[in-house]
Figure 1: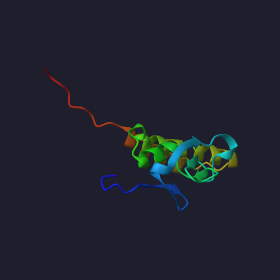
Figure 2: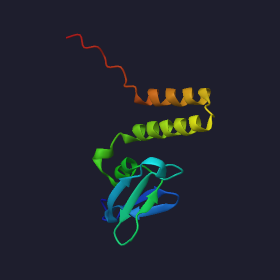
Figure 3: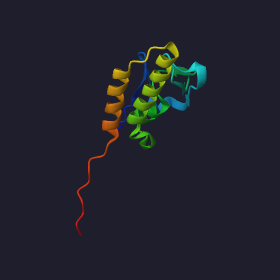
Figure 4: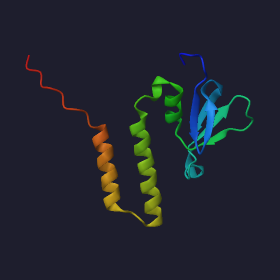
Length: 119
C-alpha cells in the first residue's frame, strides 16, 4: 500500500488476515466444500490453516494480485452452480429464481457491442 500499512484481507465470517502474512491458499474440494467452506488459508505464525468462506481467487484479488482480476463473475457462476446442485439433491429447484440468476450472470458477462468499423 502507498502508506506502507499492511493490507487486511477479509476471509469471511468475521475473519481477517494481513495480506503480507498469507503464504498459501488451497481451494477446498469435494464433500468438505460447502456451508461457507471455500478455501484453506495458511498465515505466517498460525499453526493450522484458517477456513475461509471466500474463494482463493477472491482472496488473491483483495491481496492485489492481478491474476485474480475479473474473477468475480466466475466466483458468482461457481456459487450459482453449487446452489443448483445442492437444491437439486434436495429436490427443491426454483426455476424462476434460477432463471433470474442465470440472466444476471449472462448480462454481467456480455460485452458491450463494438462499433462496426467501416474502414
